Each structure stands twice: as C-alpha cells, then as structure tokens.
Image (cartoon, rainbow, N blue to C red; front, side):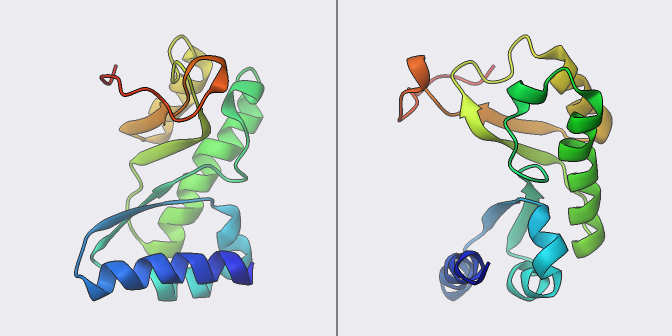
Length: 138
C-alpha cells in the first residue's frame, strides 16, 4: 500500500509542480484502505478522477455475472464519487483488450446504466501483444 501511495503521490507532485492536468483512473479498493491519503494526494482541481473498477478484475471473465459487474463497475464508481464528491464518468478496463468491448453487451449495459460516458478498453494487439497498435476509436 505504501509503495502504491508513494507512486501516486510522485506522479501527482510532478503534475502539480508543472501545473499540468492529469486523469487518474482509480482502483476503488484503495478507498477502503487509504481514502484519507488518496484525498490528500488527489483532491485537486488539476486532477480528473475516474474509475479503474473495484478490484482490477478482468471484465471479460465476469461478463455473464451481473452481480460481479455491478460490484466492479457500479459500486466502484459510487465509492470514488462519495470519497471525492465528484462525478465519475470515465472507466479504464483493467488489462484492456485487442477489440475493446466490441460485442460485450452485458458489460456495456452495466457501463451505461452506471453512468459512465466514456471507456478506454483497447490496449492490446493480436494475441495480447504489447504495445497495442494505433487505431481509430470505435
């Protein structure tokens, strides 16, 4: 936990030092263990705070489990919003996928119902290769 917080703090401090905007995608589980520290580090007008699920679960592996999707996508969003008093509208899918969330209607339904308005889910190439090829959004 201390290493994680130190890393977040280091990135935040660089952005503050240079007066540069940043988006932090937060794994909500951190709020259960370090909400005061996270608020101290990230509660600044330069920082856009969005979601990276509750526990960093692979969404494709739980795509047919509505309760698990709700926990990862809805409960995480609510916890981050409650901790910081700000709307969360963005989601970064853990791991990302070669085809993003194309044809993943069960996941996309929960994403939309939760109130997310953008998702970053494309992050790997064919056969899970890295880096992902540069492609246009879909």
